[in-house]
Figure 1 (cartoon, helix red, strand yellow):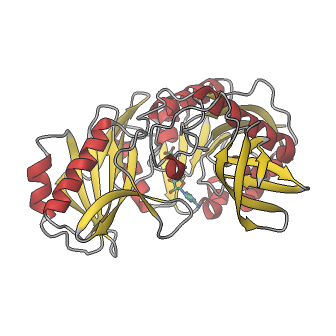
Figure 2: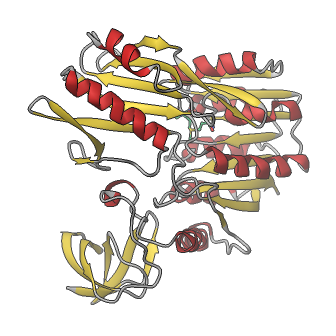
Length: 422
Ligand SMILES: C[S@@+](CC[C@H](N)C(=O)[O-])C[C@H]1O[C@@H](n2cnc3c(N)ncnc32)[C@H](O)[C@@H]1O
């Protein structure tokens, strides 16, 4: 069946319609005619796969990676046009869900459009005792796509992946299932090896012997599948990164932002907005290892953090001490439960940076009840952001919406929204 692509909708589906039925397919730019094959027919729409394009748009470019459809499906789109498409998607979501027309809205480009990722996790696909590196295909349990190189990560990271793979194959370390590599802005690396046995056997000697001289390694960590306990094979159990003059220790299993040059743009915008707002008592919900709270602690009399996971709070504690921050205290647990407790303090500005599922109805209700003067909402999913804003705008004005391209060549969009109490 042939259809004309009308637009690209979040999260990156090409949209067409035929005989009153909506069609979402995986590739195709506005104005292009796509030959598609339906995969699933739902009540209101059809999910399809693009087989070929008959009149290519001038906005197409040659993708760098052969496997781009698995991990960075916008690689075939000219970079400036990727930003334009993301801007249109956000404007549409705000118009339809939040009932707000955005004016002067833009997506700020990433500082680097290739080699921007500071973390990459790849699976090992084993066949006849020989492993290849592979991406775990999104939204699947057991589909893997073999890869040679990832252009979203640095050459340094790619080289370490290759070296580790060579050692793993030479020594038949068949218990290893995944490798994650993290890199800081100076090129130091942390390698995290995930295996299926608590015992990490021969890698204790082989990895350090064969790798340490060739790379600037902060550490090598082994994590057996069952007991997610970390075993240090070499060096330290963290990597250090410097942002806005503050030092952060990032653990093997800690959350950390992926694209530092673009994160710095967001921090600069936050800083500007804080200057004109009451920041005396501030809180950072979903604070991870403390990125925002620690960077802005100097601007507050008191800073409070809330974070769920031990792998983040253990480093949050270290980061507070390392940066000699005396006004930061934190609670460990779910924001949904702790939100009413933290509002026993008279919080004026609240930063929230939740995972994709957003802050949700209960946290929104508590915020409407407690009524901090300002809310800075950092979101990696505009759909859940729009849902939450619909509730929050009962008592808040939308002061500013910023967009950032943290993930070039992928459909992901990062948004910072500033809300002021009416
Ligand atoms: C998008 S990350 C943001 C982390 C931090 N703001 C940063 O920039 O590094 C979301 C964080 O929320 C934490 N988290 C997830 N669910 C949570 C919950 N229900 N309550 C509190 N924290 C949660 C995750 O562990 C993660 O550290």
